[in-house]
Image (cartoon, rainbow, N blue to C red):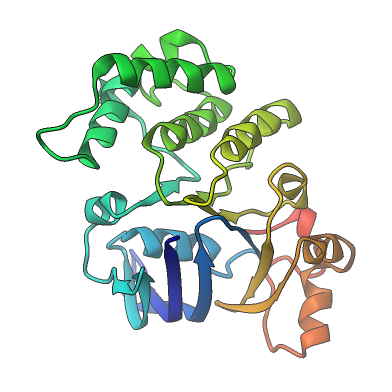
Length: 272
């Protein structure tokens, strides 16, 4: 079992125009183990995507206080590739297009980066695993030969992120709005891929706007973020409650002094 722990995390971001920094995360605490599925929900502008990018080491985000620890070892100061080798994976909300590198080349290089230099994955073993994953995700064989995300539709990019996840097999996957823009059929396929990964050695942290994703990937815990903090944690029924009350209702119930971008918008209809 591996443990990912976020302790009193404060994060600031510099405005690209004014260069002034603004604090986005204001003391996030979260602990999860492999074998668990956690979901983070919250209104627009509360810092959910900032949290995912900070965990993965995006240098745009400045940690001013607190720590991110993997099995008791701090990840602060470690570059993105070192965090990936340590067992973290981020399925991005907006995957980049990279011309000149095929899906197959990218994924094989990523797998080999987690192995000793003198022990690359045998090509037949890799291709057999890739073919199996393509079939699970209803993706055509030629997707492996296409340049990474180039010319992909939004749905194809999201499936491709899950294909990478299934091929690389990290300890922890952070899914940043992996359901965004997907119709029901595509959502079911993506969820099937994530559920296929379930094991005592794999943990999922889902960031989503929509309770509907949780109908297909069932969380052990649901965390609600407001004002840059996790303000409430519960089981899967918490997401259902949010559908009924909205974030404004929960804010008022908790007596929080937090301005919401989408005031009174239910959890299923809003925010980042």
